[in-house]
Image 1: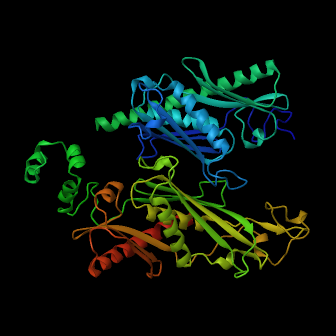
Image 2: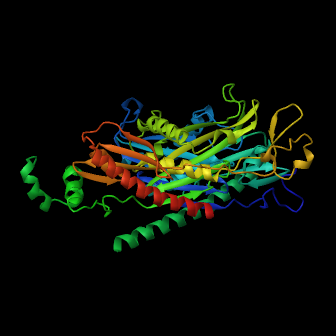
Length: 241
Length: 302
């Protein structure tokens, strides 16, 4: 099947280095301390952060002078096109762990000892790149909750099909069987917190795909910053009024 | 500081927010005596309600309903199944109400919220007993194939009146639902086909209307609900989470479009409801049903 036509257009009309449309909004769940909706094309994710609050299960606490970060990833039953999913399958558990470790790396947990920060992610629509959308949504929600962080954690995926590196794969391109590289970086510090890949790639190709994904991450970071600044302005207007 | 009569003096010294937290009942009663609530609503008025259909493109029908801050997302997926032998001409609806941890600080992961299965059962009973959906419309081939509709409702923000918002989102999702086009293939199994490929599939059964176009269900007797709180001799319509946590007597009335009562629910609580209180609740529910009917009507036109 042809994923990139001879003119360089993909199945949805994008070029190899174009991301899907991003819609991001902060403060959508009024009951949560911080929340955000993040959409990358047709992938829609809601993140809600509760914390810092009292630790509910003391047996989970390992480091006394650091905050405990918990993360739960779940997909709505109607989020995928094919079938109803089981609520807690192995993939959800793996993703919960991956996202928790990514966010834990960028939260300044030593500033909030004896407390718990809960990050809940709900996927409403899945069209590839849910992992990345979740990390981006979690970053926005954590910022909305006022939790101190080293840097924004942003994530983007890239793949390699028809001998072309492609940025931000959707579900069809992801299930094509080519490589899928998900990268999570801290843009200002220029450090990689998450790097996952499946399928085989030669080393040089991997470096190209990785560089493409990092570029995508930086663009998302710009967008997230804009959203947060706009949000702060709105808060300022309301306070002044 | 804990003496009852000294709280009068404290209220002038303390900040409003602190008073709200420490003496919640007195805070509310001060408002109720002026026939108002802290968000400036009159006692019988519900919060602003918004309904948005068709948000989830992967589902066959969906809707988002917001009453104040309470947000519910309902989506329906249709699958083909074999009908049971007692009712070979009828399809089936399976309803599930989820309260994921994002919706409220009191829901812990791994442990379902106490309210979720209760609301799930009540919703299921209300929708089936109201007769809104004619299960015979969900039949494809009598005795062999019928539609099973999986309705999933997710609470995205829990701020009181969960049952009302969930019912509204379910009703809106049903009116947004379009039954997918299917055909019977050579092996006698139903397969889904996308529109425009009818000519390729040689064994289409002509008499089934669903093959020609995606169709919507005819909904009759649409149920509308209103939850009220009873406190002393006040009746508060459409409570928020804060109000529900302080005053524990809730009454839910469900009426349909022709003003018939579909369900009445009062489960315990410190206040006993005399028939006059129940009648007032029904009156408030009637007014609310008119409002909701208009909101749903506007949604369909869009």
